[in-house]
Image (cartoon, rainbow, N blue to C red):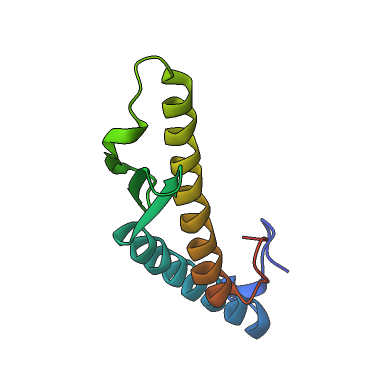
Length: 113
């Protein structure tokens, strides 16, 4: 038996070595999946399309497009709510894509990554 714990001779048993290789492979695949997701763009909309927001998979807001009819100086709250709804819509789409990408990597059902 080793003096300081671990495995005799410093070698890992076969099953442990295989688990380490699988973990490293999964880590590489998850990194590739994260990069793939970050490169995608997702468009969210609200107000019947009067507000459109584009984000990337890293959740950076890339653009906001407003229809002139939704801009009413006497009703700023509707504009604010519509912008938030469009952002949430885009984020939901990004989350769904992330679940699909990551679920394919680790074999987990959607919603658990």
